[in-house]
Image (tube, rainbow, N blue to C red; front, side):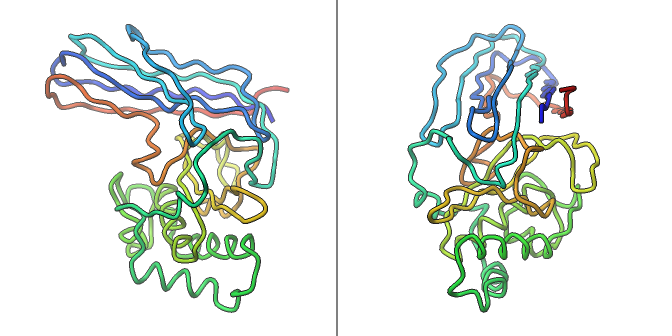
Length: 272
């Protein structure tokens, strides 16, 4: 499948700031499930700095804007050829060992209800293969959290999301990571794009899911929000321990000012 992406992140400041520095993790990497045909990240007036591939295989680039700055628009346009690998991440260059992702964070630390969710999902599966156990955990998270935009926010923890029983893809991914840690499976947070939701509705925002490491198979993408493994409808961009760690844009401004953030995303299947 050939997917096109148009993603614009627009910051408007109440008063001009003296400058801004951002670190971007916005460029997807080629791997067996995706081939990047065209990808551009544009910011008017930007001075581009260092670019490198980090240990997780993600491409990172820095950007500086000299002030006065009243607004920043980060515009992404791209075209990617995707294939279905049944969720398995193959051919992705990375150096960080899977065991590094056994570590939890403030956002993915499991509490008692998450531990109980994981144990209930794996009851009777003590001798099952890791892949079966991972599927059971993802299914349990999908059942436990209803997809409900506006019920959580960027700093909502996995424990808080499970307690509410509602959330968005960020919450599904972080609860699955927390449950996987109880089961002893390395897990990480992944950012990217999704062409359509489970019912075929076009997706109008960037997306997130979790990857669990399965012995003998490698990293496998699970999207509890859509009750599936990642497939040709997904474009994988970056990863981290949680939503904060995997944030596509991080930055600081010189001179405090209130800001308004607007994000628009359009992902479509291109004509073959």
